[in-house]
Amino acid sequence: MTGILTDIRVLDFGRWIAGPYAAHILASFGADVVRVERPKGEDDRFLMPVTDHGEGAQYLQCNGGKRCLSLAMTSPKGRAVMRRMIEQADVVIANYSPGALKFFGLDYETLKEIKPDVILASASAYGSEGDLAERIGFDGVGQAVSGAIYLTGEPGHPTRAATAPIDFSTSLSLAYGTLAAIIGKMKTGEGAHVEASLVGTSLNITNQILMEEATGFRHREPTGNRSPMSSPSDIFRARDGWFIMQVIGQKVFQRWCKLIDREDLLDDPRFANDDARGENGEELSAIMQGWCAAKTRDECIEILSKSPI
Image (cartoon, rainbow, N blue to C red; front, side, top):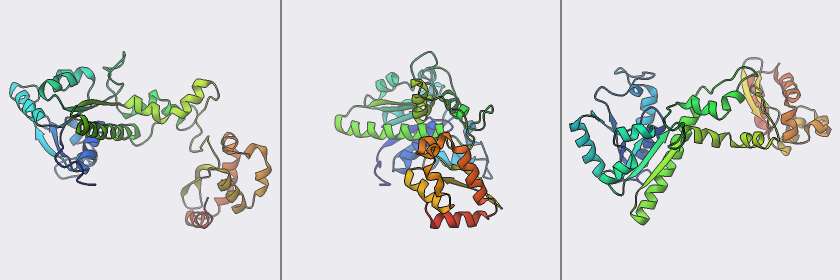
């Protein structure tokens, strides 16, 4: 599968993660990807430096398998070079707001005038329509708008994820849509505009919780590391370290009760199913914490591994 996109030519005008990582995925499948940067390099090239030349870990992760071109995109000569490259491209990737796309001549209508069957894959913070379309944003914006930050951490202390799950998930969606557009072009000869947004991605990820909230069925509050959907599902402290355990499903709960010699819990109506155990998970986490407190982390993992939870 590594060469499935051989002969597909991609121009990557992306920055940071959402656009560049989508282009990297296409490169991993064999596409010829050229990353276009300003003459002195983009800021994302130098974040978290890990090389003698200052290239950053994020840049290296998101741009492997690409060639790179320095270009003054707003100069007349730069515009001429861009046009020639677009004429030969199958896919153009950019993560800008709609206004910025138009400013740089990377909006779909402009691209189609140059290459009628081109595929534009664009990512933005809020999408291309609505009052917020021109606002920019990073991963944390998606986490915040979707309610994920509110539900993470402890009550009264909204907490964002340490990594960038919304950016990378948006990249995956953009790459997936681009692959579908490439297949569509092979069938019809027509290009397409593929769109993804950080907020759209984040709403999709948290959709099940938002459905609960919107229907009025349940209003959730943050529960730290303890899952509100099932229990005991938490991070526990052994004598010499931490480990995570997740009990999900009735059969797994039954095995856990037997493992810790607490089969009496099976008759407790508070723990009758995953939903009830999630609602009353604080007590189950406390029971599990008591079981592992005197054991080493390796002992806990060994016991749990031999009795699959």
